[in-house]
Length: 407
Image 1 (tube, rainbow, N blue to C red):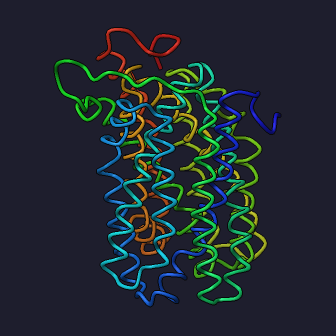
Image 2 (image 1 turned 135 degrees about the vertical axis):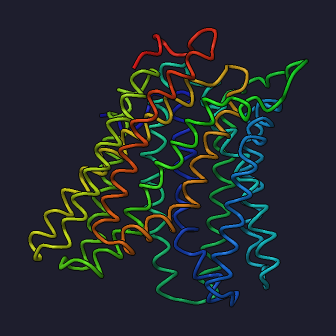
């Protein structure tokens, strides 16, 4: 396995993503504590602010991608990163909840521009048969970068001082600006002229694509199993030791880094991607069953089932991620990759908004039956994607994939 993609645009994207991800890791470990301990916002205010920011990101996704198509994705991505870095640094001036809302919403808008532009940039700079593999490299790199950032951030968190938190925020901002400098080295992807007639945001009128986006977004709630549901389940409903929480996170991170590129090989075409997401639904459903069963066993059995569940879950996660990239690239017209990738990201943001309520209510509120309901939900979502992909294929005069849409 190559640690880096071959020299060229894919390697530049990977290096820039690594720099950006380190900053994101710093932000993830520092933001909530900075806002509550240094700015003196309540946990409720932080939660509300983050939810509103996420909503802004959802609403801005497709329009931001359209902007990237019109202006050129490299310039839009670099501009989005510069804006995001500047706004992140501006957090150190926040002293009230309204100011936090303003900065948070503006940052979410800048992030939406950068996300939509990234998809269009990959589509424009990377050959069609290499796009899914490139996204796989970027996801593995993101996991490495976030882990590094989280470890570095732990030193400032241990100090628990405003100066330490400010240093983390400014370092995260600098990482965003540094990533922008790296992405400037990418080749220019020419902007696409707007169609002379008809609607501009065609992605929002593409019903099969929106149906896929919704299904994929709901399925992405499984990411919160590891970060939200399992830690609380292990601590309150199993005999497993608390260190299993960190162990499962480590297993997930390492396997994503090692296997994401390999897992992407089966999702390069639309048929392959549709089959991959169906397999992902089966794997994640099985993981939910294993997690549920762990609550009724003594320590050794609980540890074993949780470990097996984490392994099965990460396999489903790898398939699901790769399938989403293959389908979103494959269904997007060549002249609207930005807005289609932005709309695709809208589904993920929606899932991220819904996941905390859904997974905690079912897995923790309902216990074992709730875990089984979650498993059935992911199984159903995965099974629904192939028919939607076939529907999408029938609405297009020619399939954008390398082979017919038959799954």
